[in-house]
Length: 326
Ligand SMILES: [Zn+2]
Image (tube, rainbow, N blue to C red; front, side):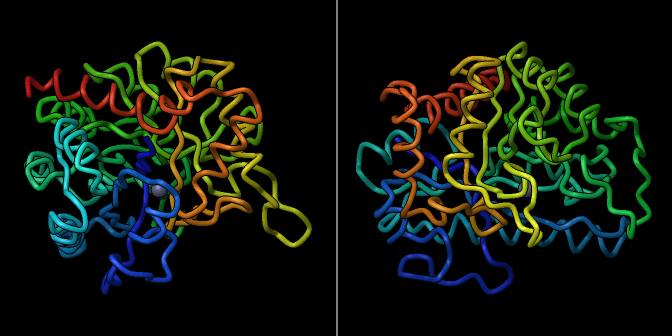
């Protein structure tokens, strides 16, 4: 069962996704690729932290979550905010739509947004994007926003409070984009396992967005998961033309490294489609089976593929909701 846990949408003016839309992920492509569910992202780019910018970021996050929920009308697709709803959608054979927020910048300094996002159905928050925010340092600072290498030494006091609030309301903590120090601190602080929804392995390619072996070990220690994504520049160094010649085999290679290091139960796969994801052989949702084929060729069986594509993520999601008392 394939659950793609990180897919962006065009904003504003998202296209009609129920027919061929020209996007990497739409309903026809999900069907062609055997995708059971997609987590669409309410993404808010990092910007200035003045009142007007924060207000606009907050409004954008809410509008996007409302849109993602509305696009799943119950007939073409089911919106799911819990594992039980997701399983019910699977039983009915109807594709599932889920949502999450990318960039804690969108809450400004208002912890109340976390509960509001969860009420709108969001299942996780990616704590930062590229560029430091009020919650944490990012793995990739944005000098044009005034970022130095580090602003908080990892998490800020507000970031710590945000993680406690996420634990309380049952919003998963996604440490993709977060600096190594911030990720390690979040993993230690969170009462439930953290996830890194879209990353790759620094041991194979030392890109700042990738997790190194120490981070992988921490993910195993806390029971979380690291998910390898299809962003070409994370998987391989750039060639002479400035682009990374990454393929679906590189995705399999990074999955294999993570599995060898921390075990199959702590690894996953996500595309980051329509947000920078897409490598030769895995360019859109219609090509998901190529990833499965590459892994099968390396000896992965159906049980392992099920864990990588959704089983491990669902296990952590349930733990997070149980931890919240939901
Ligand atoms: Zn991202």
